[in-house]
Length: 162
Image (cartoon, rainbow, N blue to C red; front, side):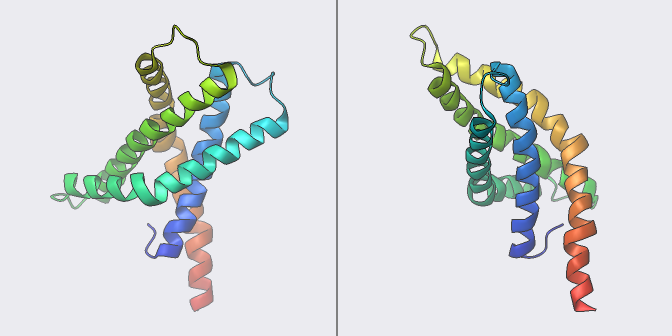
């Protein structure tokens, strides 16, 4: 899809925005904070999550997920397998790191319970996020962002060249 660093940046911004928006609303629902927080608090949490996710996507998870996915699909000519492998690796990596962020955020908002087992809390959050993030990425957000990217970002690039 993206062929230049600028296109990768644009694609990453669009993808991160969509995924973080949906996952933030989902996590607000899980934590029961939708009716309890102000709009400004919700937007602030979204922006912090978006910045963290974008940095992870560009510098840590994205490059490593692409390396792993390309190694897994080296013997195939079908682009769909490569796209699915990259999507799955990205979701696994992002869910891993963003669940840490979610756990820390939950402890900040709700306080740390002395009966909490951090590992158990983390795996519960990771599992809940993965269950939603994987189908969201593969079925909805991935195709939608690729459509938007090809239709508007790459199209505007080709319009300038012509």
